[in-house]
Amino acid sequence: MATTNGPLLSVRDLVVRFRTHDGTVHAVNGVSYDVAERETLGLVGESGCGKSVTNLAVMRLLPRPAGRIEGGEIRFEGIELTKASEAQMRDLRGSDIAMIFQDPMTSLNPVLTIEEQMVETIRAHRAVGQKEARDRAIELLRMVGIPNPEARLRSFPHHFSGGMRQRVMIAMALALEPKLLIADEPTTALDVTIQAQVLELLQRLTAERGTAVVLITHDLGVVAGMTSRINVMYAGFVVETASTPVLFAEPRHPYTVGLLHSMPRLDSPEGEPLIPIEGTPPDLRTAPVGCPFAPRCAWRLPRCWETNPSLQPLVAGVPIVTTGPDVTHRIACWNPPTADEARLGRPLREGFVPAPPPGTGGAESGPGADVVVFTTEGDGPEGGTAAAGQAPAPIVPGRPS
Image 1 (cartoon, rainbow, N blue to C red):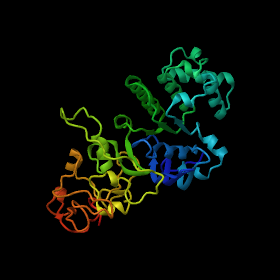
Image 2: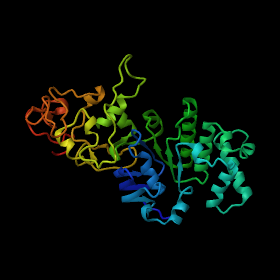
Image 3: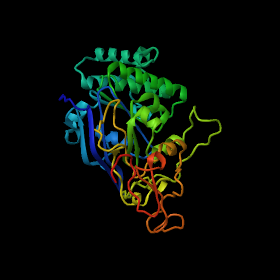
């Protein structure tokens, strides 16, 4: 296996499309991120935002013939996975990159015993005999907390509870001590007690082996305790990325602010209402025009309907760090909420109203109406200055207009 001094996994401008009878689904639209050795990255967002598809593309397991990688690069230890042969990918899967899928009942073969499935996995990548592979399977089941593993090896998947099946999937994923583990909502359909046990087990085992983890979930509570860094995805784009403590303390994309205010918090004042995100996610069968979050955004400007901002640092000119605890906080937004607005979950700028869709006009905010815009200098919130009747400009602290 080739090695490099760069990140373990590097994804650049990944584009994934599904060609269906109903049209083309724009599932992933230029996603880029890195994962370093021993790092734990969380991918969060609503269902259908492209989290799972991004990582199925990394594994080269997109459903065929509909799903295709149509652009970008995926490098694992210097190897370009988009150009790797199927034989190369079979060697990598399981041994160097492993994946825990959402539903263990459909991931495990219902007509084969756990022993047959685990032994086959081990022997497919290691030159060991049947007895050695079986001993390893017993060791793995014991490691993940399954009692009487010698007897349970002869069981079929339906003989296990949901939590136990997920433990089997974790054991199989870690059987060959992979360098990267992709966990796709590993606690889906588990009750909260079993969920906590599975997450603690996963965190402990990967830490002991130095395994890098990509954790896919829509549960912000899970990533808060499991990850060191978070990518927030929406409509096939990464819209915000930061270290986990920074993202929870200082969210700056309207979508991230909406996610945080739509879930209950233990430290919230008693009786404080949750603030739902209005509207619905976009239909990905339509090619994105402008910012995909604009129809649901309370901070949108006229240009948000026309141009989709790229992922940029909050402070222009700073070196961009893509991995580790000092990762650069970046967002894709023309008009990010201020710290006070993010804390309260709504715009606080006097006279500001979201820009209506192009061509709709509107008495509150249309062509010719006063629109309040804040720059990065002056007396307004966080140094902003109100300017009525001006054409709005991108408002990112430190980013030139």
